[in-house]
Image (cartoon, rainbow, N blue to C red; front, side, top):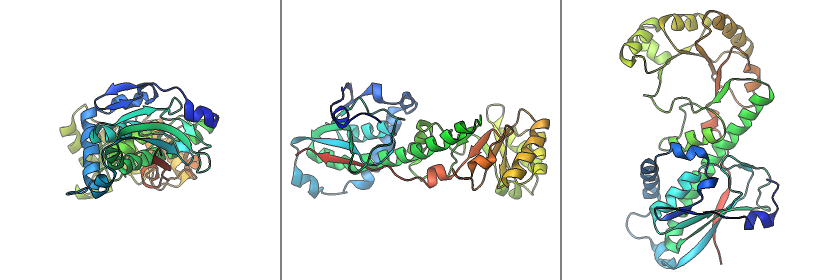
Length: 322
């Protein structure tokens, strides 16, 4: 962001009431409408229960319930993501009001944020004990969601700069209990989520095939019999031959797994010439640094587990005004 500190700290604010939390609707990504509020509240409530003392909150007793204000600061470069979860945390804590600064735009990169150049993003007002109860949970979700979005946006930018027209995608390698936040971060960063869970798309991996006696055809046909027309079927393949068998059996997507880049591009070309409407996904140990070697007009998707397993968190702090 090129805004100076005066603009960063004194930008126009817009507020809209939602439950007990005042949020800035215009500065939430349009993607926030993907997240049903009851679901977010349920997830955030679980996060808070994991952190809130089971009996007495002595720290809360020490500070009391006077109305105070805390400011949210971004302290390292990255992409802002996770505003809906931040809002929901203080909504669940109760009696808190959030005002987002006009520069706080989800999906925006703040390349100049640092410990010496902190950027003010929001103000939270409410009973001070409530602010402190929600502080760490709100920051944890925001910093991690922003970390996923940051890495995702970097990878998508590399794809665009190389004129590759396919999709950069995450995988199902997400943190247990934190999947929705990380998948949301992928979307904010411009990447594809891949399947959200086991029921969204059928993926037949090597273990499934081996457990079915080693027959890809049998596994695909058995899956199709119960999944019907409404679900896609993807098959993890270790060779061009396996990919051909999967497509002939009716697979919608083939994953060319752990291929060397040149072999992958060669095999993807041969495969697409015969099955132009079957999606080709490249996966297996691919990183932001090695991804360009896999770009090909015959590869539709490149997925990376690192997007939700190896991201760096973005640093935020929430400080009581004193």
